Length: 334
View 1: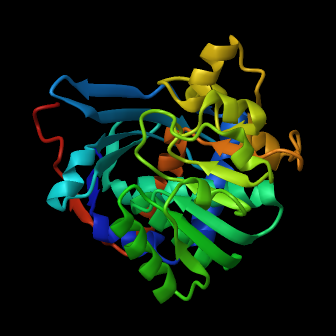
View 2: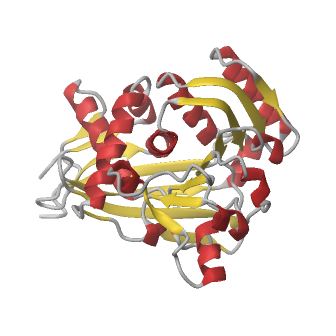
View 3: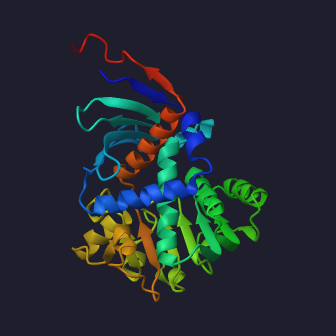
């Protein structure tokens, strides 16, 4: 019987902190492996609650082949009301399974892994669509946990950025985020009063909100053809989507659950407005249209969690950290 290694958030953080290049490369390889068909990534399942309609727990099972050779599932909860009590919105665990005998061999705290793979996917998409690690001005709409992780990846990957525009529905959150950026050495940091101000004149726009319905509906805001990282998936109206060049990570996954892409499909009756996937961009199959906003809407595939999680497990195991439970399965399964 295999042992099970339990890996805490501190263990995970010690691996991913300062490892932006490694994490982006893991995500790139995972996307290419998935695109090549050496994966299995069923649709996520959403557990919702009648008494808390704004909350959910999502299961993301997956298998990732290639150099990874791992299966597993992320179980991630999103309870936005937590933040009012000083508790993070998201909590998660990741189970890794052996692909030969099926037994789980690791249990990892996964909110950090989830945020890391989201940020790594975002900056990978930004670089692939922008063509370089540079932006004259970056606009953040939503300045919470995910925005913070995206900023740290931009910082650690040494993106050249001249200025920032920050917007959050709670201005104090944007102000705090601005203080963090400034302390990290960013310049030209300005908190603005509207989402439009964080889009206009920004050539990279990061949407990282908790919006459940579109709240940005004017395609004219994107007439300057920025790169848009639509990480929260539900911010943009069908009018904005139809005016842009749309890239996602997996079309079948992203065009569902009332995402902006899903609402646009319901409006048009087809998916012709989706130009392709990030793997298509990486492989040169799809090229950036410089005349339109490039809108990257990654659904967040479970294979990415497996890629980062397996790498973390290997790092932690190599240094003999975590907690190993040799008799986790006990005699009850004999």
